Length: 137
Image (tube, rainbow, N blue to C red; front, side, top):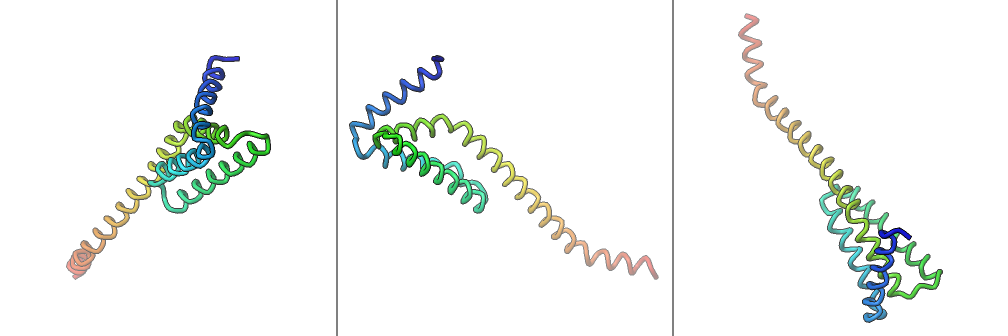
């Protein structure tokens, strides 16, 4: 067994013991933390992308809970596994957020550039008409 795997198993065991103290609250607390973490890191994304990501994670969590219950895990153990999965996925979540922030910034910059071009067009439009007329006659 690798050191990483052993450390992860040890962490799950410690977290499971901690959550057993809470008993039935382990799973709801873990679900609450995962849900709010997802809400936090998806918040800057565009509404449709944010909604899709939240639905995707919600579905994954629900499927994981059902699968672990079917395997006979105690709710506190399921909660521990959800939290470990969340903690191990934070780097990926932040990477997802960075990509979508970059896309959002690009969209905003291109929109600002387009608005600036339109403003410049409308500002220079009367000048173009005057210049064209003066050059033709």
